[in-house]
Length: 171
Image 1 (cartoon, helix red, strand yellow):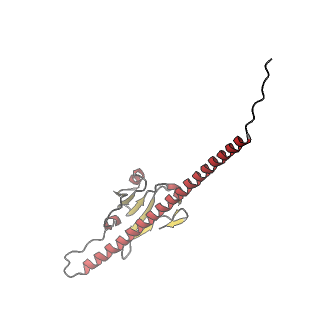
Image 2: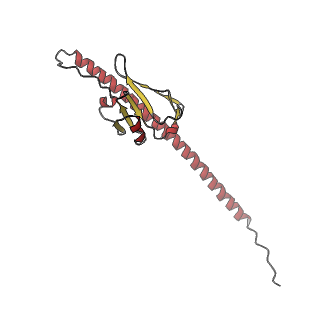
Image 3: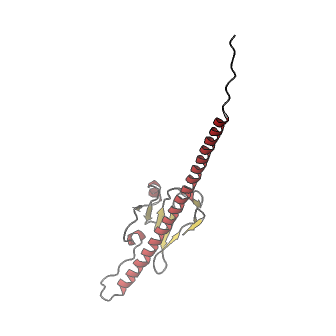
């Protein structure tokens, strides 16, 4: 008869090494998940800053355009009055790289995310977020719209709905 040898037991050093490697892998996975979440949050905050910056530039351009029209109309030698621009993007010295031109809501939905448009029908500015999940309110909205209008003075830009982006209001 052949005698069977008992199976060799793994050494305690081998068990300790395996446990160390397992903990290292788990730690790397957890850190990667946290890093990914934080990177996503930073991208959302950067997009919010981009939205607010673009709206601020448009508002400033509208005020400057209004002042230019007022100065031109007050000059005695001005033969014509410059008409106020309804499209605030036309008042900018340099168009944003993600400005897609004149388009309506249907066309904005087909454009790449991060695009700005001007809709002359409603006199509105539209923006399609890169990730609509960052837009928390109102629910189910996939683009943001801002009305361009004024009773007196320079044209104003106002949000059509109370938009909330990552807990912060956008107006």
